[in-house]
Length: 225
Image 1: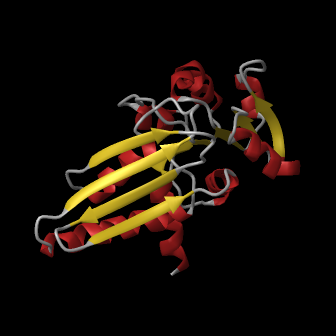
Image 2: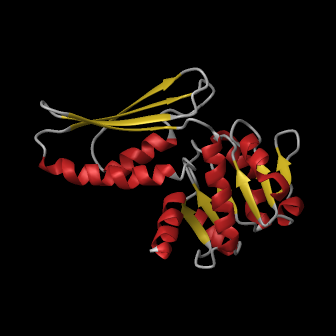
């Protein structure tokens, strides 16, 4: 399998490191991706900031190469799914490529269901990231709010070189419940992205178009049951 990487920052460089012999090309702002080189790849892993997505979006689309996107802070076009299908390819979009985050997703949904019997529950989501992260709240925190399906305040902190900490707190007058996920090493995002790239190539059930990381995770889990 030949995988190319676009974006060699904090997480992209981890992907490059872990790919080893599977790495075909790595691209950054000094070595921009081209359609021809992307077509040589079986899959592409992309970790660029949200404000850089528009610069490479058309190139990746025109290459027709299956792609795993880890970019946040970008408003994807409404017709993206149609355009990816027209290119006869498939994309995975993720705010967070941690495989463990999908366990969190299912847990949050159970917390939401159970909270309906509590008296006046209040929710808060707090996220902490490194000082260079531009978007706030994080895409992951926004996903947590979506999974919860409740009115919830999201607060953010930017400090040091934190890989990512997210905590959901449910409070009533008499008790407090907390759910916390902490990324101890950035390699968890690289591992998840590589897993996605391998699924894009080898998972014959995955159809053309745009899918979320969570949809892919659930599909694979259901296949293993």
